[in-house]
Length: 148
Ligand code: ZN
Image (cartoon, rainbow, N blue to C red; front, side, top):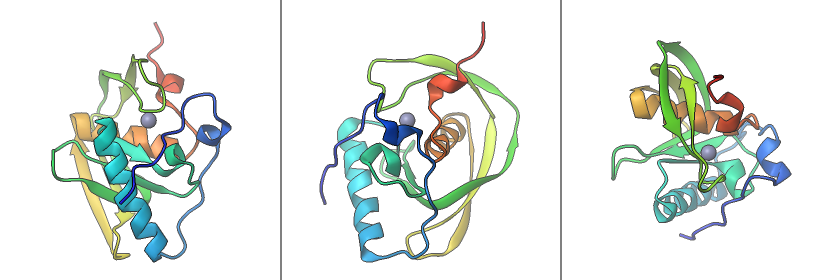
C-alpha cells in the first residue's frame, strides 16, 4: 500500500465531475487500499478519488474505527431529515463551517467484488457519505455553508 498525496483547494481537479468505474480491475483495488491508508494517515473520516487525482466515482468512508466502507459508483437512493454540523475537508486544511445535510441517507454502491450493496447512515455517517459523494461531482462543503 502507498500513501497518496491529497490535492488541496485551488486545484481544478477538485471541481471536475468524475466518471463511473466500468470495470473493477487490480488497479481499482490498489487505489481503494491506498485511499484507506491515505485517509488513516490524514486522520480523516472519508476520502474521494478526485482528492488523490483520480477522476473516478470511488470513495472511502470510516466513521467507526477499523470499519472502512469502500464505495464504487455510489449514489444516494434515499434521504430524510436535516442536520446542521461543523464540517471540514482534507483538501481544505484548517477550514471549518456549518453545513446543512440530510440527517439520514441510504447510498447504493458496488463493493470491491462488484456486488451491489446499500449502506444507511445517520448523523456523522450520513454527513460523511454526502460530503464524499459531493466530491465526485466537483462539489465542496464550502458550497453548502449555511446561509446566515
Ligand atoms: Zn472533502
